[in-house]
Length: 285
Image 1 (tube, helix red, strand yellow):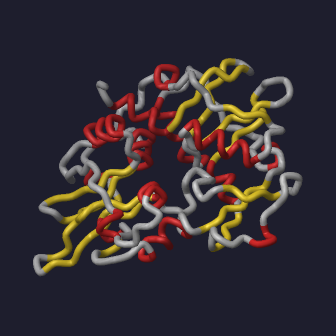
Image 2 (image 1 turned 180 degrees about the vertical axis):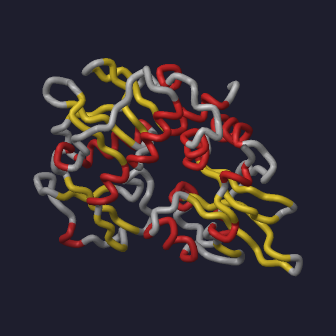
């Protein structure tokens, strides 16, 4: 299967143009929850692709306003490359999306989800047993942990989830960045929060702008509930066993709109399968 068959075509890709400013991209990154947006520049020879701006770029350079200074070069691919080749590129570079560029023009974009969909549909090899792809190191937290602390745990672990454990140390639920985003409040301005700052004993506390998995942006305060994780987690967790293969797990992820699935043996948690792990089954790396 070629990239052209799996990618989102240019007409459906949201972009920002040079010259431009941080404000041009805020709506997409902040309000519409895009993780990155391609940058293009109109020229006499037509539109030219210039780079990509991500949430991390905005957070790491809070004082920079110009898109030209915020954007960065990222690996690209072409329409005639194979999905297997792109899966290897994503796996090697640790990126979830790859612009499709030919002769300097943006032709589309291909994401991890596009590759997972190709596996689920049988267009790419999905026969690898999920037991071979699962990670044994699982990020976990306690059900009574304040959400503010759990968010920091997720951030430090550099993963978008945490498996929630109950009093018996058994899996009780799943908490993701999305769950935190849904209950977080964003307030403009960092310098003067006045009487809005909560005390340690209040139900809500103020957190730094890098909270919520780096999805929120500089110059804004993020307010996260300090109530226990159990109030925000998903208690009915979708799980898989090592008897399942990559195709079946890809179908499970797409059906349930999730990016990771705990691997269990009986009632015991033994690993985690993330969508990016499914790509490893298509590579020789």
